[in-house]
Image (cartoon, rainbow, N blue to C red; front, side, top):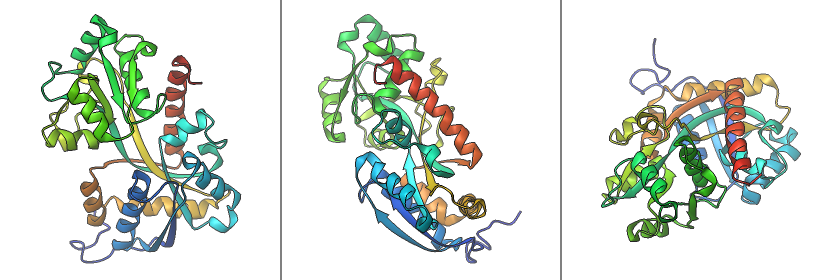
Length: 312
């Protein structure tokens, strides 16, 4: 079958949508911003979309942009809002009153698995080593992360420890504001391991600062084949911080399907591969109803764990 990218990328892909306005619930330079702008770049450079514009609307943990899209639905039928796992976590904890069901679900497009890293000189060489150290003396084994208690890094650590048949509520989790502080804590021994995103873990491992002892992917990720999965260590956990796109509620199905078709066609273009590789993203495509099922499953997984940990 001939690629949508045409002959060697010289010919533009067929145009599916004239223009898209991307609504970004956070500031410039963040993960949402990079996802929206990278997606827009690939869609316009490949010719699938005629033009793209961008609007950053921070506030309320993403709630301001969600509220805006719902309240101004009719005048925003040309808008796609980027979001990710926090829309599930923050709606459960009532950071904002809406949830993904209040929007038109377009597609999940990419993801970043979670990973656990230890200091390169650590005596721990696997996640099972970490579990053994924790079982021997829980007070001496703290796990750090970049999110608040009850946030994603904490939930992933609790999920993994629970699957390893330890009490997830007893895990000592220490939050850090910035990556640098978390790394300093890892190097000083204040924490035994760090719960972080896989792409960040790979960057630290390639810089020679850490060892990756577990990834929440179903199988080893080609971007860093040396990183073992939790599953291969007998710990049955899979988790992905997805990123994807939502449209205003009440969007005509025909329009929603055009957006879904544009994003599906994007994966076959060299322009997308360049953006994806540059950012170290993993292609995880869930469109329409598949996206809804994926989100409902994650909502249950996260919700059950947050109740156990006392956050709900």
